[in-house]
Image (cartoon, rainbow, N blue to C red):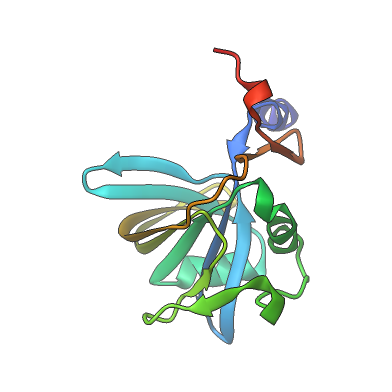
Length: 161
């Protein structure tokens, strides 16, 4: 059943986000495809994390920034998706918000959130978060999705309806 479950979700495209926070020894972040809208009023979202040192520190954080990424940031997304890669280097165009969280300045959308619930589910933790602030950087890049263990760009040619 586990293999069938994994195969089902490999065939289901998902948006791509990089989630950042202040960790025990500085900025921490990772790539996630589990971000989902929970409520528009009040604005809230959820995501799940498991397994890595970065995930452990994000789970402990009081606030996070959820960066919704597009195809122009695929190289950055890949860096945050691989354990052990150097993150938050000067060439990544990032800064700290006045509240301390790391902000990736080129992300089309950045949602600063306060974690409200942490729910253990199997080997993962489901986090629910209240959206405190939304930052938008308008760009013209195509959306980025994760499908079948790879990143894909959505284009106008991929539209079917």
